[in-house]
Image 1 (cartoon, rainbow, N blue to C red):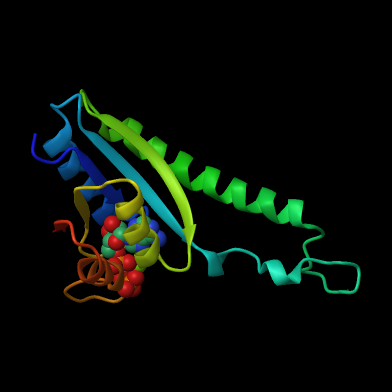
Image 2 (cartoon, helix red, strand yellow):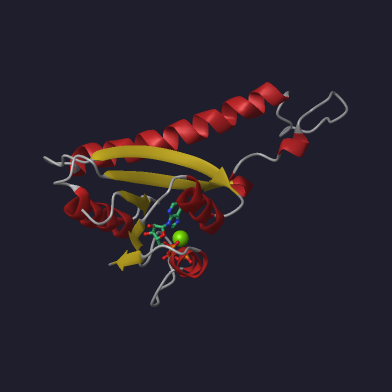
Length: 158
Ligand code: ATP
Ligand code: MG
């Protein structure tokens, strides 16, 4: 098996599900291969930690204390990876490769994916050409950004 460590960036779109099927088609027969299905949660989608209340803020959206913020982050990451795990359970059939669900927080999906590629020794990215975005066109901004920012091969699928 030429590719042993495949990343499928996952945003819950049908395109990303197609990408997972293609990745499993490539890696499925090989017990030594691994497919990582990873959702990036943009940090802007989380509550702003500067709103943490030290008692001086009297705003309804103040979060209380840092441990509350930690808990929100952990719960968000946990939920995203268990959503991905449910999709894996449906898609895995008799695949013999390892398949893991993961979620990371990053400034942007592109940065999160590019960092993951480096830190996890990824040798192939398989991703949707489009995602959840409503705009139609050739290729989504996340796919475009990943193509520009990683050095490993990227397979984009419809
Ligand atoms: P845009 O977001 O630019 O409006 P789009 O949503 O149609 O366009 P992209 O966001 O580029 O297209 O999605 C293309 C692929 O990128 C998806 O199929 C998925 O594989 C991946 N992707 C997109 N967003 C994320 C994310 N937050 N985390 C992980 N993977 C993602
Ligand atoms: Mg998108």
